[in-house]
Image (cartoon, rainbow, N blue to C red; front, side):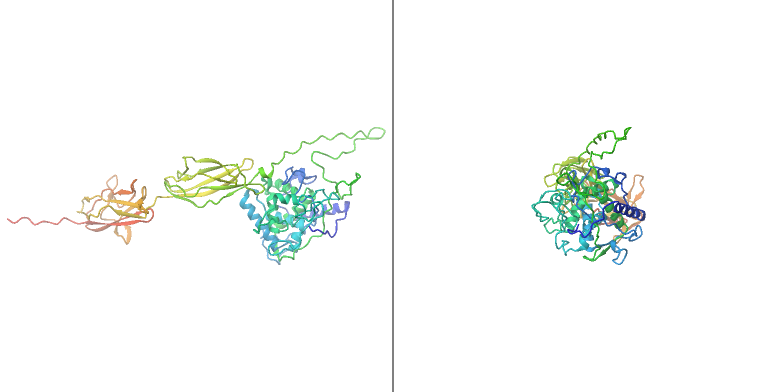
Length: 569
């Protein structure tokens, strides 16, 4: 959020009532895709679950102040409309500066490629960006997406704010005593050190760059295997960003608003919000606290004491001790949590029947921080009816990922049946990640086929051709075994339609056949069945075509034997 807050909300019951009325009116006018979970309607963060993206009892922003302005009660467009409306369409509040909008959408695409199970919507990033920095102060960023000067929150010195001592030597926030929230998405330095990203490819992880900050926010929200299409997971994600129910409701309101329609506006022309939150104060020396506009959220495992029942004659009985609530089950640290499974450069998976695939299926596992994850079991499975197996004759193999996060399956050996199949890579147990690769086996091919001799093939009408026909198929000069060959008897090779007379093969019942499907043997040889002539003399042609397009034409002649004159007496 902006370093200099122009005015604060008025404290007291009036403000609370106004805010509640605004939220109720907003809820009546627009319905978010994923509603608030029951536990998020009041109370503290743990009402929606104890999981957080960062350390327990911590938040990405250090619970810094944020803008509390709510979206207009009139939504920018009707339900189901485009989210790429022209600049002149809808309320000015629906406009998002061009570079800022591009950063949110780029982050959504990047996370979808590495962690599709999270289902991160860019509108959620836009909602958080709105309440944290007013869309980076109305889109005041340079051509690379960097703000002209750092966006800094107040010093988190315990005086009305959380107490967070310096963790970065002032490198990000310019304060070597206490931390401050930094940049368009208001990360505290210690959180940025863990989650910072380089999304614009300039070699730096800059919290003041909207592309870097948006991607970092996206990965942070997806931590712990969250699915943001699930209401409870979305609530946990937002509360892990700032542990405030009011914050959750404000973000939810903008999220619903942006889902109904947005449009791009030029950088620097966005609408700036005006009303910052009043943070819950921290204890001050002397045992007093600064006033608050509403009760502070209670800590996990603790409750506020309430007055006991009145005793006869006045007074009250002692307040009973609250029963402690068991602490929530700790979330695995991000470094030990599988975040995504991605393609590690596997190319097209195609091989000829009986051959070995040149490409090997390879994946890369990343943890919730986006870093490579080593020693993770990855299971590869072949599914399909081509007979393809991994080396060693197995349909399923398990491989441990290496230090760079990659796991590579053994080579694939193609089966004898052509067709398509799939290879699936699976990793993780609590919420498995999967990748599926399409693969295919093509029939064996030949690029040449020739006769092994050159004898003329002649038969008398109604007789069998005396000489057998043998051919050899090759591929790149080597014998082509198991190649499919089609033999067709035609009248004219230029018009290779099956002939209805002339030479023919015979089926098992002795009926004429003029087309046969054959295959070469292990040495690439093909010996044709016997050929027979009918009663129609003439010249005919036999066309043989291989899988792969090689063709040979053989001439067949049907003619009566020459009559010989009887010897003279």
